[in-house]
Image (cartoon, rainbow, N blue to C red; front, side, top):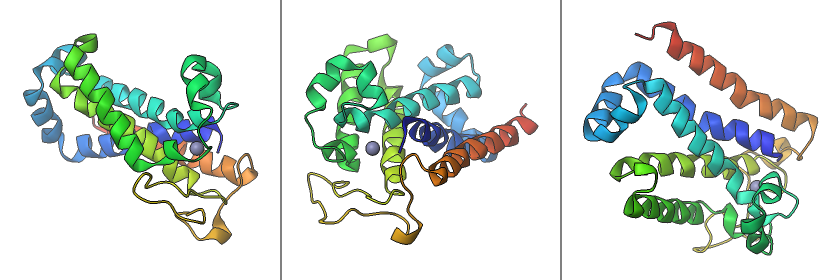
Amino acid sequence: MTWKTHAAFGLTAISAPSFIALKNKPELYGDFLALNSNVIDKFHGEPIFFIFTLMFFSWLGSFVPDLDHEGSYISKRLKLISFFTKYLKHRGSTHSFIVAGLVSFILYFAFMYFELFGLREETYIYFLAFWFGWASHLLSDMLTTSGLKHMFFPLFSTEKGKTIIPKIFTINTNSAQEFAIYLFPLICFNIFFVFYLIDIK
Ligand SMILES: [Zn+2]
């Protein structure tokens, strides 16, 4: 899949549940703010800025797996990291939900420990969003014909690529079907955004 499709899924992966949660259970956000006074200062009590920040982290996470491919959008931009990661097998270890979780946890721990950007305990929510974006990349790759073999690496891998829809409905990268799939999260995002804005207080 192309980076645009992954970015679209990454943005929607976190925004859709956030908009739904805020709309239906605003107290969740209140509880979260009460627990994390740091966040209140940063977002001036505005939930929408908080959601945009979560979307930014999810968007970043959606690019990371393709660091294992020299020609990918992210590899061309993060040359220093991709210098090492380009030697990894494409759709191998970086395309694992477990590796995604471990990397997100390590980043969370580093940010929390060193208080980078003034972030402390509440940082976990950003790296959870980062993991969501990464996971959305893996799920969308599992819509393609070749699927994924290493999504549970290092626990186990499968011989054949696994998909989340029947093989007959899977799509090829850069095809007309991919364009249709690309539009899907964008439409969802807009619907949820409008739905959220309709009676925002
Ligand atoms: Zn990929």
